[in-house]
Image (tube, rainbow, N blue to C red):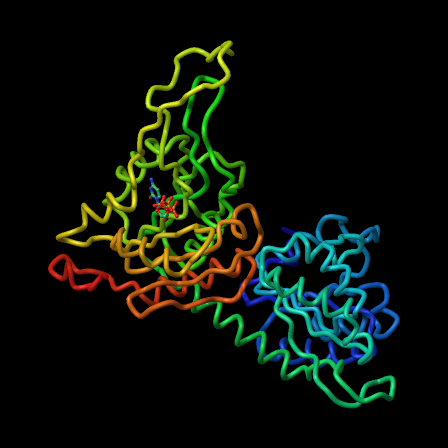
Length: 418
Ligand code: CTP
């Protein structure tokens, strides 16, 4: 990271795009600088037509980033700019910028920076009312929300074009307040599971038939990996037992790769004594070939081939059995059902003695980037709206943290599981 980016103060990256409201970004910069926040400003070419970079440079006391290929600035530094920043706030965000970001474009410095970010992102739209209400813009905003971008405003009132309606950028004071409130929420999220040890299973399992074939399912592992990431972000020490999936390991998570249901069960039982919370997200095979062939099975002349399957260990049920008299771990299950989700999920919750079960429609959840779930606990069914799996994972971590009651050694059994 370049020296000028190193700072012990909180730092925000302020993106400015082409809109009359660009002048309000100067006031926003001033407010943040006054509050002791370091502001790195990135402007699109269109923004520079509305307000001079020199103004922002003077107010922020820092270099202003304008073009990705500007020889005076290191071509890759704009990506590093978001590292260590509390947030990227794009204010004003034009309709064109929202469209490009919704598509994941990276054809200018600010878009590339947003795509490469690791920190939260906020946009404060500013545009003419027709542009704002156009289905294309609304579609782009919905996409951005689903991708985890927080949308601040816009306000209603008299617009620069003379029309009256929705599209006016929030005031600099309102933007600064909203960003602070969200960051405080994030900081609170970061301590939800502090000091807790979370063990999760994710992905499918693969049950060998012979050395080259096997039985598996279509689970992508996305939900389990997202939950592992959210639990780590919430401050937990996370161990993820992953079936065969090619997903990257979330940062701060310890991963144990396994293949079969038996491997997964062995890994869980090896780690469970250190866990406070167990979340079974994996789609574990219920049956495995009773006697996998040592050599490749050859095609035979008969029309049919019969495989004999034996049941696998039910990891969750086994943990419940072990905890029967002395619950040590807060167990959370998932249920993938194709019909009667709430009723079948609740039956599963009772059968596996779980304080919390998350039920979803298998057809919708498997391999998708979003999901709609119903939480089932002793108080009944609590449906959540459909959302992106990353957002859902954070929400589920909040729900789990809210229900989790740490057990003191003498308080075992006090959790009142159903
Ligand atoms: N599970 C498990 N071990 C198994 C099977 C399932 O730990 N051998 C866990 C899953 O990780 C999930 C929950 O049990 O948290 C429910 O899994 P699901 O496949 O929906 O249900 P099953 O118990 O397998 O029942 P069925 O297939 O009949 O719906």
